[in-house]
Every structure is written in structure tokens, then in C-alpha cells.
Amino acid sequence: MSIEVLVPPLPESVSDATLINWHKQAGETVTKNDNLVDLETDKVVLEVPAPATGTVSKIIKENGAIVTSGELLAVIETQAGASPPKIDNESPKLERVESGEDNESKTAEHEESDTPLSPSVRRLIMENKLDPAQINGTGKDGRLTKMDVLDYLNKQSSDKAANIASTEAKPETGEDQAKPETAKQQAKPETAKELEPAAPASNLRPEQRVAMTRLRAKVAERLLQAQRNAAMLTTFNEVNMQSVIDLRNQYKSRFEQKHQVKLGFMSFFVKASIEALKRFPAINASIDDNDIIYHGYYDLGIAVSTPRGLIVPVLKDADQLDFAGIEKSITDFGEKARTGALTYEDLKGGTFTITNGGVFGSMLSTPILNPPQCAILGMHAIKERPVVEQGQVVVRPIMYLALSYDHRLVDGREAVQFLVTIKECLEAPAHLLLNI
Image 1 (cartoon, helix red, strand yellow):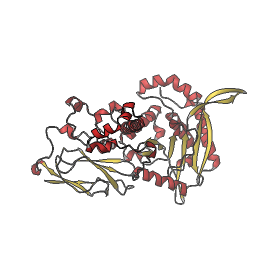
Image 2: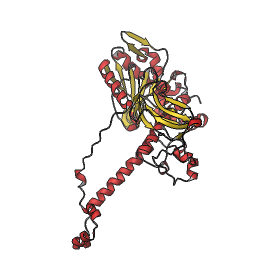
Image 3: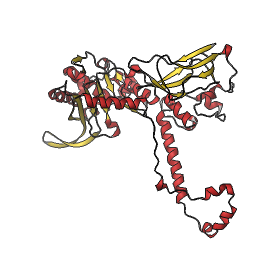
């Protein structure tokens, strides 16, 4: 019996997807719910599971194809009408090792300890013909993340380049110089090419042209849209983080013991932002043609940098979350982002965005709006600086804050007072309850 594998329904905001990787080929056996193929959209990578157990009899769409909802991807023959499989049925677990090889040397003990790989990790493993067992996983429960694979590939490239440079720079020994003709006479014809001097490393000027990923192209489109369509302006302030740091240091152990999650700085900024948004509702609004939409809820986007590009998962109804709920949600988003498991629901909507360039060492920046939102808060690195308190110069941990906003909707007075409200909440955070 023939079973069709179709492109799953895509959200209304997504018109099509790009087929980026087949995990099974024609003639291979599959088990129901095995991941057959990865589809990349503007926001996430979708896995298409096998609808039934059987044999892949035909693949309709190849890698790189643009597909839409309901299109035919492949055909599976169920067991009743399946042709004999072309792979070793005695090693089903080896089929799921995304190394591009049979990898028959892998031990049974390691097979039993394999953890699931995300679509992006599987794709890298297959494209580069790697053995996952040779890569250290830093994800949850030792799970392999895309960054682990990229770091492994970068290390391989660096080691290879160092070996090449070392070989080219190695001086000839006195013995080699004394008997150049003897070496040539002893060389076999087929190895003569190996004796030719390699090109100097300084002459290597590599270039690589690759197509933009769907996510990168979408990010570029939205950033240009924000630049063209909004009257964007940025205002700055600074906040003394000493009170937040002291409060966090005092309660972080009890907080983690009770809630099973670490107390970070982002939850303080989320709480302070919600308080400021309540005081200045225009900053939580958006423009739709000639209308202003005032949102009576607080869905805060938290910008996250991933190997695929910048994504903004959304904390839904953030005002209803306590500190523990915020920290758990952010931790969950971070893990999903690293493993490529974010869903459309995680990225949908958002009335205000917070981005933290400080984790990368940024001192000051002007964040770009995330349309159709009319404002975005930028956090930066905390640095000790001299400040004046009661006529005395003291050293305090200071962070610069930046608020970019759409001047068509938000006046400068509101933007400045919004930042001042956040500053006040963070410099006197006792009323921002920790729920401990």
C-alpha cells in the first residue's frame, strides 16, 4: 500500500519552506514517526515524520526545493507491499547515526547511550560525515548542540591549517640538502607530485559563496523594513546595578533551592519593563496603517542569538509570571534555541522586546525595532565606574540602557520617562517580589 508524505500545514504568515535535508533515501526502511526530512521556514526548522512504517519507494522533492503546504514530498510503501530493504535490518540503530556512513565500528554500548539530535545537528553531521561519538555534547544530559559541532569543525580546520603551515615552513635538514638527487631518484613516478613545493600559505585567499538561510533572509528583510517604515530614535540612560546584584547574591541560593532554576538579571529587567509599560501604554502599542493598537497584555520578546541567526521567542502574558516563571521560561527558550526545537508558537506575537548585547561584551548600541512593535530595550555590559554619591566619588557596577522607539507613536518625553522608570525599579528593587 502506498502512503504519501506531504508538507505539513504551514502557518498563515509562512507561504513556503525550503527542503534542506533528507534523512532517508529511496529504498531505505522507515519506522512510523521517524524524522524523514527537515524543512526550513523563515523562523524554525520543521521535522516531517514518517506517517507509517515501510520502505521509501520514491522521493519527489530534492534538497533545496521550495515547497508549500500539502505538496507531495515522497511515497512510502507499507510492509504489505514493500520491496526488500536495501540496508541491514539487523542494525536499526545504526540507521539513525547521522554521520553519512555505516559506522559499523560503533559499539553497542554507545548505541544504547545515544541521545536524539536536533535537525540542524543532524544536518551538520551528515554534510561533514562526522561521528557524533567523537564530539563532546554540552547540552542538557550531554546532548549534542549545533555549537558543539561547529566548534569541532572549526578546531579540525584550525588543526589542518596549522599542520599545513608547519609542513610548508619546515626547513630542509642537512641530510636532505646533501642528497637532493638521491631523493628524486628514489621517488616513484606516482609520488613525484608530492615532492613539488606547496604554494605559500600567504597566497591562499579562500572565498565561499553560500545562499542565505531562510531565517537570515527574513531577519534582513525585517531590519530593512524597520529602517524604512519607522521614525526610529534612541534614548539612553544608565542604571546602578548594585542593589540588584546585592539582592541576587543574598537570595540566589534559596531561590534556586526552591524553584530549581538560577536567578539571573533578565527577570529583573522583565519585571521593571512591565512596570514601565503599564505607566506608558503607548510603548506597548503598535501602528496599523492609520490606527494605533493599544495592547492590554504584555507579551515580551527576548532576543536570542543562535548559529542560524537572531530569533525572538516571546514570553506570553509576562505580567502574570513571577521571577521563577520568567527564569524558567528564558532557560527553556535558550535550550530550545540551541537544539533547534523552537516552535511557531514560541515566536508568535510580541508587544515589546528586550535584547541583551552585554552578554557578548557590548558597551553601548542602538537596537533596531522588531516590527510591528514600536520600542525595544537594549541591555549592555555591567562595568565598574566611578560615580558621585552624596558628594563622594565611589565605584559602582553601572549598565548603560538604550531604548529605541518609533517617534511616530512615542514622544521623546514618554521614552525618557520610560527609561527613568526602569532605572528606578532596578535601583530600588525590593518591591519587585522574588516570591521566596
